[in-house]
Image 1 (cartoon, rainbow, N blue to C red):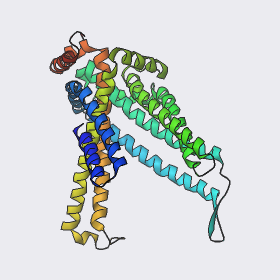
Image 2: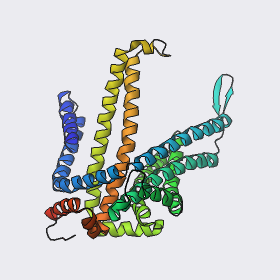
Image 3: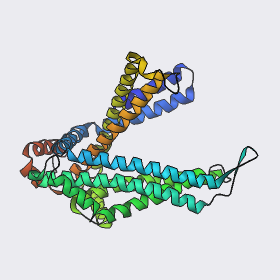
Image 4: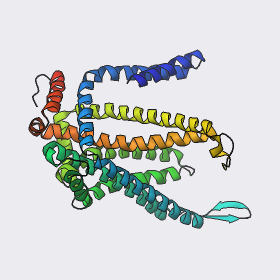
Length: 360
């Protein structure tokens, strides 16, 4: 929150100093929006903090789920390489060289849509499978803590359920988002054609629809991972959750997501600094580098990307755990009190501090 306020304030001040009135006005608008948002959610921060503490405790008790997350990321990387090779083959058929100039053939939009659909669908399935495994593992820790452990029956059971009985629900929900993403990618490809205004409107609508579906899926797959619900049944449970908890689930999720993003950036920055220091202290390692100029910048950039990606994977695992904690607190507070009394006491206190007349 403070980072957003500082950045918007800096944008406002710098724009006015250089005489950019329009940029300064935009900075003022963003600064006021962030200030109002900070004031509105400030009282919710303690509850979000306890959610994060509970999620981290659950992940710490079941570290094997992190290994599963990195396994799925390796699958996603391998699929991206395979898909890229396939696209290159299609590209060779679409583009031909004639008289040292490239002339574009008529594009078969059906093939292009199927390529995009296969790419996004597979990545959505991998991402949502990870989400379901984390949700199932945290649910086991919540309701049956004796089954928790690094590679315990809780982690293994959640993985098996995700890959078997819940896999159909995961594929169905993933397909809905993938269709929107593939259609949006086709709209992006058509930007150089006529009817630019219609294409821009379509992109805006598809982008909004994609964001809504992805956010809905994030909560729906918590119920799929926890209880093995079908996708439709999980969707009904999500609607009930938001009716009962209102904005609290969204605000807690948003606050914690901002923290994870900031942590990922910080770790990426530290890895960039490490890469630069390593290049400065060991120049002999880079004497035969293919590109001999700006080797330090290349090492720093590589370090930043590696640090950002690896940290983001870990943070996404904890983020899934946070969403599961919010759902479990709404669905099973009595079990939480019986199995984890200290954490339950903290969460009840922060909840009742904001809603004194609302029991849990």
